[in-house]
Amino acid sequence: MGKGVMSVGAVTVLALVAGCKSVAVTTDGAGPGEQEPRSASPAPGAPPGRSASPPGTPAARTPPAAQAHPPAPAPRGTPAPKVLMRQGDRSDQVRTLQARLRQIGWLSANPSGLYGPLTVNAVKGFQARRGLPATGATDAVTWQRLLAMTREPTRYELYPAGGMPPAAPDKRCLTGRVLCLAKSSRTLTWMIDGRAVSTMDVRFGSQYTPTREGTFTVYWKARHHVSTLYHTSMPYAMFFSGGQAVHYSADFAVRGYAGGSHGCVNVRDEQKIANLFAQVRTGDRVVIYK
Image (tube, rainbow, N blue to C red; front, top):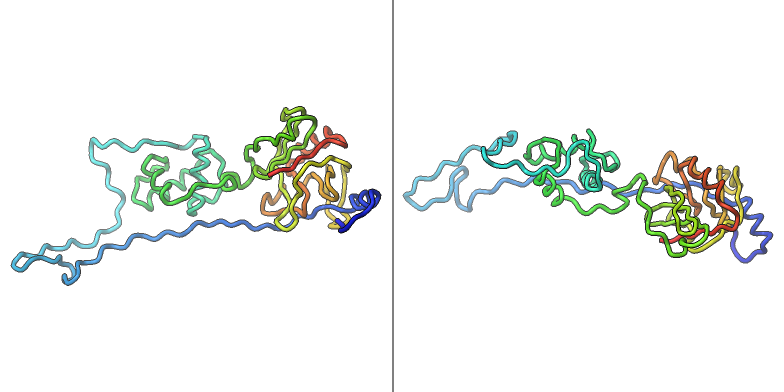
């Protein structure tokens, strides 16, 4: 995109050649490591292996160092802790469990909300490391231990691969035909007279080439556009501000949020944007907000 003031004709020519190129974006991850507690030191002045005792009192024998053993079974009559989540469950709480396990390195898969075999194995490992019965089910004791070692997951930790529920629509999206784009949820919702017609995951510009915020209009559509600036394909392009457009991105489809654009709004579901492209008209509004 050029700098300075230019005529309407110049903007049209620029739109024909401008475009967006995907760029790499790094993300922060790994949670802090853990330290095992140290054994208690003998009392000052007491010889090794003996406790400090008054004169004339036989010294108590110190038992040998405890060896690592599987957890002892609970005494008879002790109720087992309540199971909160188990294999086969699907819920927001399961997604939170998975995000917390990822924070401390027990789970590598993205949170899905489904308590499957990978989650079972992660919970078993967490339990065994702490001397808890390694059942693979998350009971109340396991959950409290995990809460004490982790922090509340962010929305991006809960949905690192996308699929986040769309944010509440901006009031500017509630009338007419609007492409409603929320940066907080990384979603595009196609709305007509306040009704959500379709929603899809999107990827915005990177830190140094952000997607503009505000109210715009679709001024040009190009089914098979190729950026002459970056020589990259921009299928189903709907231009709304200079060279910035909503378009399909094969890079987003492959790499997800590990990449970014030079300001364009990328869509990774080709079928969804194909349907959207067929419905959107020149002159429809585009609202981009936090």
